[in-house]
Length: 111
Length: 119
Image 1 (cartoon, rainbow over the protein chains, first blue to last red):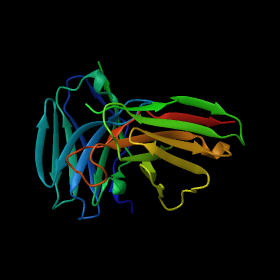
Image 2: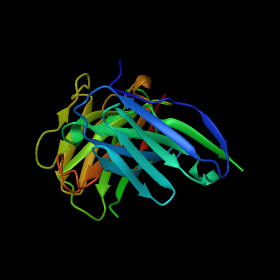
Image 3: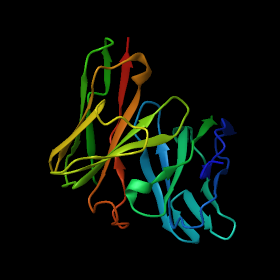
Image 4: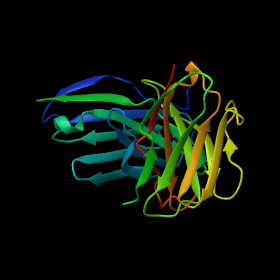
């Protein structure tokens, strides 16, 4: 069993839709959770960074962490074609040298 | 914000040759840089942690003699793939943080990656 599970998709939605991206994890020691966006042939770009359980909002993006269920989500409101990318969840239990990534979900937002 | 620059973005080399990839932190000093490898449609896998002025720490299964890492200054780390073979073809990405491995207030920033193709 992988430490972090993420559905690779692809996920295709119309412009303006609300997108829900999710990851589950098995290690209850994870405390810091991140979402990265990666465009094709580019490095990952940090979107959201949360500690422990709860919600965090930044513009059209909302990150949610439910540690009791070992489940994290990223919601994108009013999705745009420019949101089309691969979204990677990442988390760690120790230092950055123990950062564990999900496989990434490919999202396509069509006009 | 923090910027990490990686060069080259793309390289094609012949089997048996060596390739050097550079990773620079442009507007901050990075005591620690990380090297990842990403296969198509797969996640990032940490290869090694590079510490300025000391030897890199390699993850299990990563050959340190094949993937040479040098971190000679606070703004530059290099990864050299020695005697490259077709199975080394991959997307290599570096990352860095201002605060080191345990400063969780300083998020990890990534370079744009290097696509290596070995023929």
